[in-house]
Length: 298
Image (cartoon, rainbow, N blue to C red; front, side, top):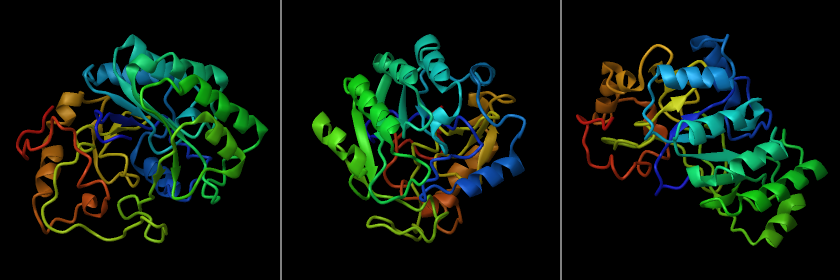
């Protein structure tokens, strides 16, 4: 997502695993850890359970949502209903990133009609390198890809995004004819969880010294059972701050557990997961920048 827009609460819609199977997403680690640490009777958000979670957790209206998460969002059956409720009915703003796996044209229309509530809309295109083996780029997919461009191109900051390489050859012409820009983003090793990942921009290793507060730490990552984890790189769920079905958003981000973690970033000898994250030095909301470690900003 862009670094100049408000960082939202990341939302993972389902914990059943992503059938796109990108080789740069540690799905196996996430699914295993979710089953170990979370409520496995709640593997996927429905509109009802999402509403209940947000209302019980008293999530402030000024908190944005990022519908992306650890799993392609449209693998959950009620994703478009959830996004419509959160942005149109409850009044949040948000952003979305999707490969189009599991989406329908009706879902695409819902997102198009929410353009006044979206800060950015990202179409995560398959590259020509086979890194997304579960995504079948057939005539139906190409038709959806073309339709999404037609309906979303007027959304604020609509972007077609690829990683490391140009788009798949079957959608290359659709993209070229659209006139849309496709930035080529570099892959990263998910805060050290993919030590064997290779790519032109991949860097392995740890940052040294005190670490800055990252904007993603200050918003969190919402899971289908209501748990709030550290961020979109906490695939191993090493930092579960609380649960919005049991705690309010305010309580979670004023908890001693969360504060202790934030303060540990100052310790140059701390062994926190953020040391291995590529985002640690650049993802910070402007409003949170330079606040220091005693004022969490919530």
